[in-house]
Amino acid sequence: MFEPYGAPHAIQHRVGDKIHVVTVRFSIAKKEARSGHNAGGEEHGKHAKNNIGVSVIRASRELELQTGWCNGYDPRDRWWGVEVDFPPALDEVFGVPNNKQGARALAEFAALDLDQIAGREGYASEQALIEAWNEEHDPRLILVKVKQLINSNLGVIRAAIKSQHARSEKKRRHEDANSAESRGKTVAEQRDALRATSG
Image (cartoon, rainbow, N blue to C red; front, top):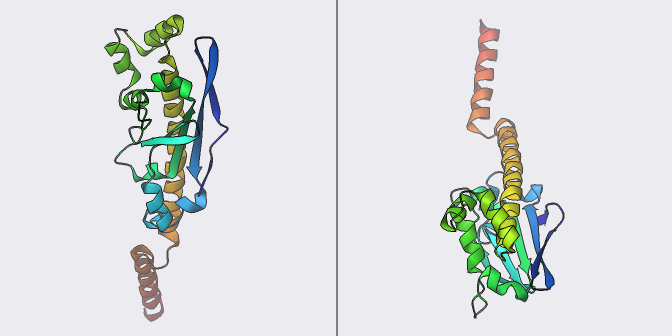
């Protein structure tokens, strides 16, 4: 039902003397899955609705599905997917608790915009925060990079889904012979034809 959206993104992050890689993958529901009248009401659409969010993966095991990245009001959010995959060496940075059931720090970054985080940390702007954390080799910089990557790609993916949905709605509205609009048009054409022949 889903297909990759672009190549996986590998973000390198140094912890001590070792470099670790966080991989972020994006996917989008295939056009056929999103097409048709009320695709979200179909079985596959309901399944997708139950799996909305960013899948947080640690060492090939899903920890949780974070919904803080979603627009809660937009049912089209079911048609995209994101995976953030990181190694156990980054547990502390991602905020993984002892029971290995989540990534609190990543969820917190999802809930706030970077200017809010910068203000909370005592910086004047997002850019000042990034520059300072970069100079200080602050391990949380990886969370900033992941957030920026997710936000920029989701913007593009959401626009693609919205555009495709708008085109299919317009096309469907004019092609459905059983729609009220089509039936009304047919009746009006028949009435006009009768008037032309009898008048």
